[in-house]
Length: 279
Image (cartoon, rainbow, N blue to C red; front, side):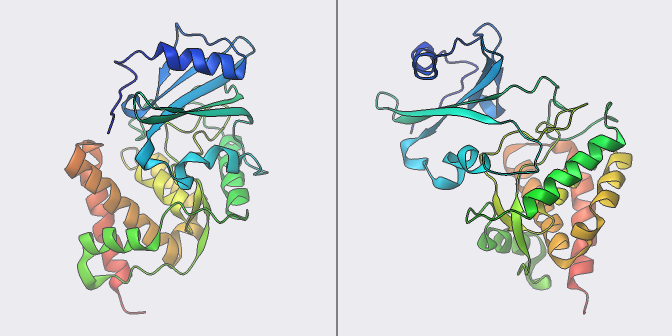
């Protein structure tokens, strides 16, 4: 299986193909790379944004590969507008590429990393209301896509809590499933990267943002207060425990987000006690 890091491996043939297919010129002098160099974005000569990404042929699936198109019909959500897409097979690398052209969001992301480390600037009351309104509208949408499966929740919660917690989710709603601080812009609130959205436990998006806010208690409190109904129901508590367990697994297996290990463990332990208590 071909593994590429676009930060280190130039792919001029891919950029040429994208330019010809979308009939757009890319600002190749200023690339913006995604996590692990698995994607790259460019401004264009018509003021739009083009994101290019790849997947090995063996790993193409609807959940990831068709997310942007499926999200293009959502209403009431502050997100980039999809303008055009192209995808093509690359037999020489055993990959499939895709490029999506969207409206360009000029506001920067709140953080360069998913986790928040310092008090952010530019998050007005209006920013928070736009975030809540967008996630509320998303949760009210209709989709057959699945972002997080019950069997994955079962595994992660049982790995952490054993049989003490019943992991069965009773409320499922559409979720972005990757709401963190590198996917949110300010001072205008726009939610980026819609590849993996779909059904998840109620409270998943709030639980994700809360987990990535634990290093800044004032922001964590703001998230908790803003989404208290979603986070305090049983589904929301399970979503919180799932996210803690998932991120702790990423920390131990891949070294990601090491500073979060302590706060995540304390949060997970509190949730285990709450969820295992007799009702």
